[in-house]
Image 1 (cartoon, rainbow, N blue to C red):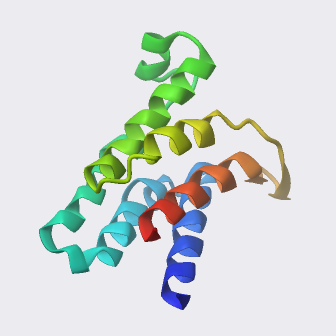
Image 2: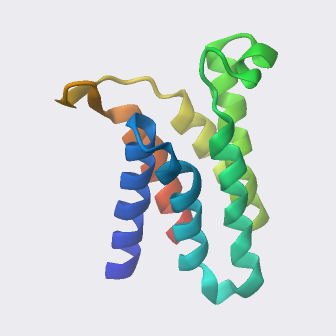
Length: 135
């Protein structure tokens, strides 16, 4: 139980840090932590490494995904569906509902240091990913 809580905290922190700076924490370290946690599943644990590509593609104003989807809301929903793919391969079918919802959240936050913010929407997104990994 303690290990699961720590994994959720680490994944959430890595995702949030990667949203503000040090993009590699979200893109590469987070999927590696998820995969390492699932090592008991053997080779199947490498499925979480798919998150490296998905979390690297982005969904912002200038992203290719945004150009295809055209609206911010649709972009976020599609991105959430893409992020759910590794979880679907583990049979966690509810991910296709909760991740698009998590990515649709738009919430403020507060400034930690100049130019760095604690964003509630990032907390929601990456806490959801962390919970999906350990459930």
